[in-house]
Image (cartoon, rainbow over the protein chains, first blue to last red):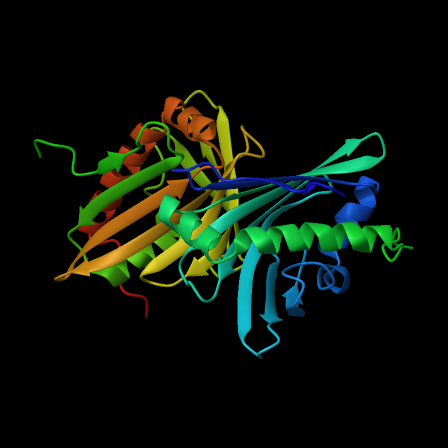
Length: 163
Length: 163
């Protein structure tokens, strides 16, 4: 594909990051790939990092925590809680343990577009500076990798409707 | 007192509301008044509303829900989850059930200033429009009432160190 299918918007002077991406898969499978921890571990984060899920309790009030390990052995841990969990809309908090106290709120809306799925992912940070810090830490590449890997996972046939 | 001791800032074009208020009480009592549901019910919200706590599970991943009833019987329900719960810093999600899907993230930092307590409360909304909508719904008066009522409750001697 000649252009990046992941559209990332982060207007200057705002605390927002918005991501839009379409997947050639029905919404229930995109939802499943986003909420089953074994599947999430296969696409979330930059390609070269390995993800280990410590906890992933997908329900309102449920907590999650995971650790991503780089080839040089450095570890990056993240945690948060789920506020809303429905197939069209998930809302959760997000904290990088390397920047404790800077908590963002993420919402992921899945729109059915004729059998394909358009994901609208929005993150809002507690300040513009915190948003800028996240971007300068390489978050945009992490998002692009994640979306590409999710597309590949969905295309591989590994994500099936649960029993 | 001649001026409002609650300082509310909500810059145009941002999704933020910031509140600063000092209380003539030690931090542990302000924390207790903010986390004990029986005490929270005595100060949170506009004066003329009665608060009924349905659930108030103050721990990371704990959920809360409460209903405020106006003199004419109308009810306003709110819920969310706690992300961080420590005496100096509490972070939680917040959703008014009358505007479902518009979830904000609130942090409350309690600063010890020589035995008094300075509260820094920050809310960030998922969009500038959602923040503006909250303000136009009367949120600022609700905040001022809440802070005054919390000050009165702390001054009444009803909040004591646990055990």
